[in-house]
Image (cartoon, rainbow, N blue to C red; front, top):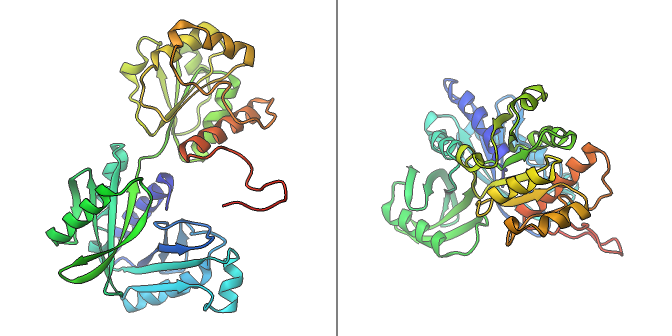
Length: 364
C-alpha cells in the first residue's frame, strides 16, 4: 500500500488533474499479490496521458507494461484488470524479477466523479484520523468501473457505492477482522459476488524531537525525507531561533510542564528526547508518561541511560534508550540514521535485524 507521504503526493496530483477539463489519466492499483512482490495490495500509481507517472509502483514491477496498458484504458475509457504471472510474456517476467504474481486494476480518470473521494481522504489525513477505504472493482469476476467508500469507525465520509446493504456488509466484515492489513474481499450482494479492496488509511507519522543538539539537527531533515511530519521542541526560544530548520518543520517552545498542553500526540507519533542535559531529559520523559505514542526514545550513553532508568519519575515508562539500532554510529548523521531506522522498525513491527541469515538466504 502507499505510505501516507505517497498518498499526499497522489492527492496533490489528483487535485491538479481535477482542474483539467476533462481530466486525462488512469489510476493503477495493486489489488492482489501472491508470492514475493515488491509492493503490497493498495499501492497506487497515477499514469498521466503523456505517459509520465506519479508514485511509481516499483522498479521491480512490470511498470512499463502497466503504463502502456494505462494509456489504452485512457483511450477506451474502460477499466481493466491485468494479471502478471507465469503466463506473462518473457520481457514482463524479466522486469518483475521478484517471481511473484500481481493483479492490477487500471481505471480511467476522465471525469471529476472518478476522483470525488479525494477531498474526504485529504481531510482524514489533515485531521490525523485513521480511516478505511473500500474500492469495489468487480462483480462476479467481471471488472466494473470502481466505486469507493471511505469511513472512520462507522462514520461514512464518502460513498459512491450507493448500496446500503453492501456498505453495512463491508463495514461489519472489516470490523470483525483482526489487524489492519489491506486485503481484497469477495462479498455476496444484490449485484452478485463483488470484489472489494479494503485499505487502512493512517495519517503521516509525526516525529517530535526535543532538544537542539547536533544529532537533533541531523535527524530532522532525514525524517522529512521519509515523509514524516516533524516538530522541534526546546524550552529555550533563543536556541530555537538560532537553529536552521528544514522547510516544513514546526518549532515549538515548550517546557516539560507545558509539553502535553501545547503539543498534541497520537498513536502515529514518535518522540525522541535529546537535550544533552540529564535533568531536562528526565523532566521531558516524565511529562510523557501515558502519552499515546508509537515510540519514545532518549539519546545517551549506557551509563547515562542507567541513571535515567533509576529515576523514580520514570518508573514504568517504556523508553528506547539508548535510542537507535546498533550500527556503530558515532557522528550526528550516523546517530540520526540509527534512530530513524529503529523508529521505522517499531512502527512496522519489525525487529530491525538483517534481511538474510548467515547462509545468505533472503527473508521477506
